[in-house]
Image 1 (cartoon, rainbow, N blue to C red):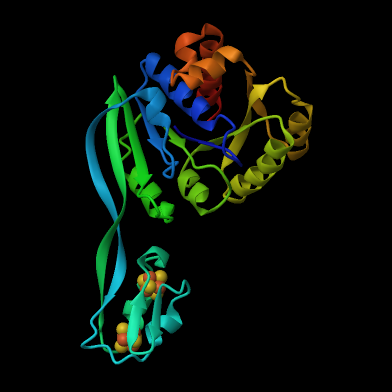
Image 2: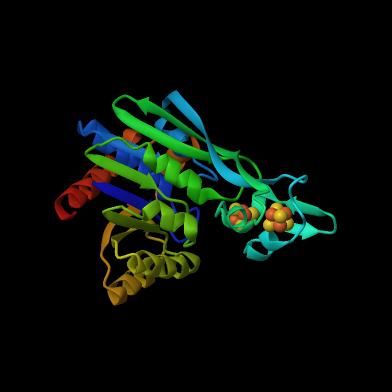
Length: 280
Ligand code: SF4
Ligand code: SF4
């Protein structure tokens, strides 16, 4: 079972749900893999505290122009949709951070003046917490191309009873890359106007991908009626409500798993896990 934990916006408690679900499943003697695909800020490790045992650099291909061969025809700049290669005066300039590694410039160059060279953009790290396997990606500072890093993280997932994908927040390409191939998505939201707005967008995104999804309300109790009404209108089930609890907030601020410290939360997460096992 591969379940993505996603949210339309940051700060809803997505990682809290994901890490607690992983921990409770591992305590129940299931083989669990946690994939932290929130590669701009992977913080699952704060709560799961994996012992690192492997890492690699993620590279993408970017063009390099041989100035001796190049005749400044400008065709590479014309094909590039991202202005990552530009013919200016007597030079061809390459902006590696803008390059999407499509290979188009290399293909159209009539003189074969372009070669593709690797450029490191991120690190993928793996480790373990007891029997739980943990994998995360971390983009280098200043890099913006998270989809290749998310693919690299997902490629490192071994077979397991439960694979949890901690997706990046939002509804853009990185989220699509993270949830692609998952059996189910849990959308974590908070009962605020911003949470409601972004939940609606996230629901549309996941549904357009044809993946089943359900909603988890975090910090429930503030004002959940509008969220539940939206879910009712959209025909999506609210499968868990985590309370707006000081004990949970304190555990979070100390980098602790709420379900390790609080039996009530452990039972809630256990019920959610049981629901997933029975319905997916
Ligand atoms: S590989 Fe694609 S995105 Fe990168 S510079 Fe060439 S045409 Fe532009
Ligand atoms: S297409 Fe090739 S020859 Fe033409 S400007 Fe680009 S690198 Fe130079």
